[in-house]
Length: 390
Image (cartoon, rainbow, N blue to C red; front, side):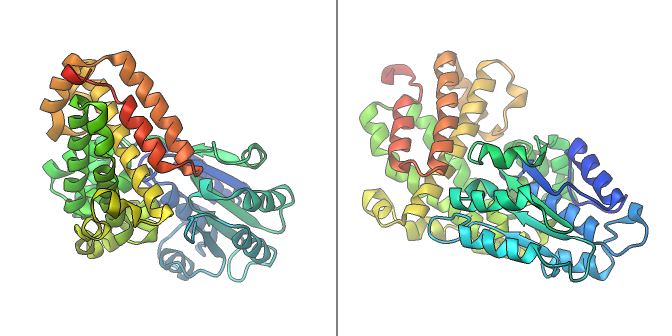
């Protein structure tokens, strides 16, 4: 086969390779997987293969022809990319209507028109209903790829009209090898970052390209561990500081560019390296601290910041559960190992499992525009307590 950039996900890669060899892909394909797992890279691999000009289907994508170069640079006339925009970071009706108009036209240079809808879980209801018509009544040679973190926010009618591929975690050695290959880290550092990324190549690339982001994420993890010993008043008082740290992490991700913030994958690494210096701590400084600073944030900024906190919380909770089970070798945040071991001794495992289940539900609710501050306060009070705090 041609040169695919996706790492890991062998079943999904084989399905994409078969589609490229046949020269035909499902009219609608839904890629599901956590942020940074490689959904966008796989979607662009499929696009490159379908649009490649090499006469040998087995050599596509060749990465050498004019079409492959245009896909790589984002300027192929038959490749359309749709992403959330605006203050609410939604994909709106107008974007989908414009897309449908483009897909109704014949391909300009290739055999097919390909559309990649990034963060498809951000399609608002009107946009999904408009997209549904295109899924039910396909026009011409088109392939619509929806990349979503979770299908829960998509209409069942949309999901039922797509072929689905799920992307799981990539083995840590494969992620570490990618970082070394890209020149982002030496072998020892690559292993540490790969473990922290939890099988997500995009997150690993982002962390390795910007060491400052690793420090800020580590600070947030320690803040959350410290709150295991805090009473209710102290926990609620810490909310604004957690939001400020979440703003810093989100600012660093967005400083690497919109695509990197959504789903940074291995092939985006060279650009990420060039922009890493812009990621610094400026976001944290600009956001301010305390409730007054948090109040000055726009609603979308607060939502993103709380989601970053909840994401870090899930990782801390996961490592706590692993440490409590005695599987220290599987801990991802190795620099927190001693703190995790100490907390695990006093931990109520049932309470932790219940907390993690509730956390996942609230993260979906915040994505769907539940009040982020109330969600954060709720999780602060539900976080298991140790020692005197209990």
